Amino acid sequence: MLGPYAPVDLHLHSTASDGASTPAQVVERAAERGVRTIALCDHDTIDGVRPAQAAGAELGVTVLPGVELTCYWRERSVHMLAYGFEPENADLAADLAHRRGIRERHIGRILDRLAQLGMTLDHRRLIELADNAVVGRPLIAKALVDAGHAPDSRTAFERWLRKGRPAYFAPSEPQSPIEAIALLHRIGAIAVLAHPMLDRNLDLIDELATHNLDGLEAWHARHTAEDSARLNRWAERRGLLVTGGSDNHGPQQLPGIGEVWVPAEVVAGLTARRC
Image (cartoon, rainbow, N blue to C red):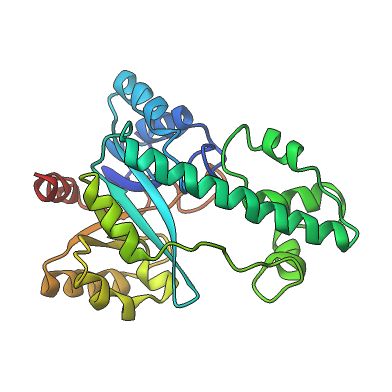
């Protein structure tokens, strides 16, 4: 063990969406650090869950099924974390397939605009680079860098891909977090508002609580200790669960797996709420 690391990390990403490590590699890194329970929460896909669970069974790491759903509320991005579902659920599979279709059409619009601006990227090549995972703006930014159109991904976002820039498009057919909560409860999942301090979605908590939101992500890489304490108090007053994780996307990103302290008892809270 390389510690001291938290025994729990309930917000991790893999190459199934926009992470840099395969699901098995995510589990291997968790095991190396003595992190005993993790949740793979890739964006709008659960393709990495079963491979991660298989690796976890060999390495002694419990892998909870998770997913991070992209939603929108009053033209703002809102992410909902889901836990405690069966990965083979047909309703969830249909929702994720629908999301993938929307995303592919959205990415197509971005690539068309970039081509109009003199920067042609091959959509099929992007899919190949994603290894059949989700193609998103981070991968487009990387492709722009590789093609010599920008010195780095941050510049690519600032010049073309960020809101207000020439190749930005607002999402079509957006799903609200209220709709996401309804879907998640229909499949027996727990709905948690992701990194509310990062997205400055505190004004949304009370509204979502009236629509049966289950919990808040209190501990996060971009939350301060004061943020986490405030969210814990907020959750206690409203009878909500608290969860947390590093939101790590790869070995080069800090904080790493287990480097955001999350109490082990949050897992028991998730289990009790699901029961």
